[in-house]
Image (cartoon, rainbow, N blue to C red; front, side):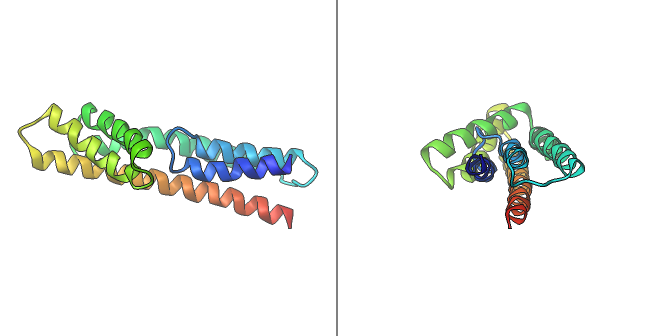
Length: 155
């Protein structure tokens, strides 16, 4: 069970970059498995706090791109384009396709929506790119912290 717990914790870190893997929830399940094994000795408060953090991060990951894209003046086309570009980028041009795909997808989406203002489209694409970087960074930090606590618990 400990091996599965650490596999989930590591997969959670990978899920910080790969949009089809729910990173923080996988890492949290890893913490729970470690707790249920004889090696985990987390308090219930600790586990509840991490459950709340996990939920907040996952909700933020869905809300933040749309919020920042709109904040930078973007449309739904830009948000959708960013997601499509991200998915295409990860499968055809890993690992840099994640970043480039998100930017190009948002740019393309906004140009489809409003093909007369390329400056606005670049600004919107930059906003989508910032949202992706911020969301990825937060998920990476959260999953890495869970690994830290799991390793600390094992020592």
